[in-house]
Image (cartoon, rainbow, N blue to C red; front, side):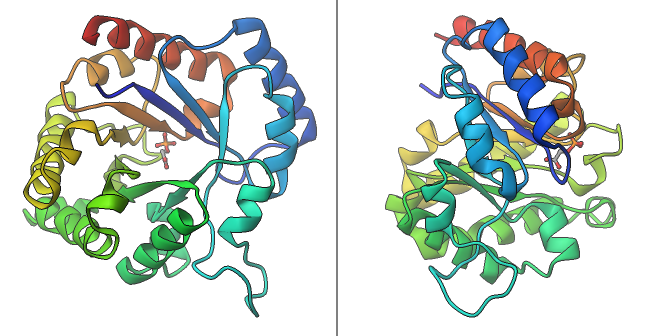
Length: 256
Ligand code: PGA
């Protein structure tokens, strides 16, 4: 059974006051029921957020971590450092990292390998651009992005991975993939995993990301292969992210 997962990616937003208010609202809301609830703050706030949400059941992850465990990499953060700050998760290959910071498929695979070695749970982000979708190559792009990582980590690594399908044209644009479009890609991804690693596909969670809101989340969760969501903009308003968690709780209860 795949437990629903809701992850908020704050990107480069937030400060100490924001974290305090956010954590206060989480405490008042109480623990999520049968939903994994994660937050990805800027790296400099990881330990502060870990401490602030300690009694809420919310887990914390980094938006990015380097592929090496240490070394001369000015400005970078190693996965072991993330772990030491109390975080348990890390994103790899977010489209903003790929587009703006030169994260190639190979580098993303290096980062997933390093994250697993540091005992972090990686969420691999994949997704096509608008031009790629219009050219009919969306599946090929996603298969390539996923395949490079899967090749490196094998069945054992896949068993510890989650995947987020985030079409680039839907991120921060207010234009979500329709539930049917997202479901089609999720089912395709699951079939790729099944070919490689059989039963791992049954348990591997595939999240959808790209302009998820409390309004569109229920229809996305209703699709059988959408196991969770990665939320950017809407996660900056705690009540909106909590409303998405409520939608996940409803479907989780239904699926069990
Ligand atoms: P968005 O971002 O929800 O603002 O579209 C999603 C993401 O980048 O993970």
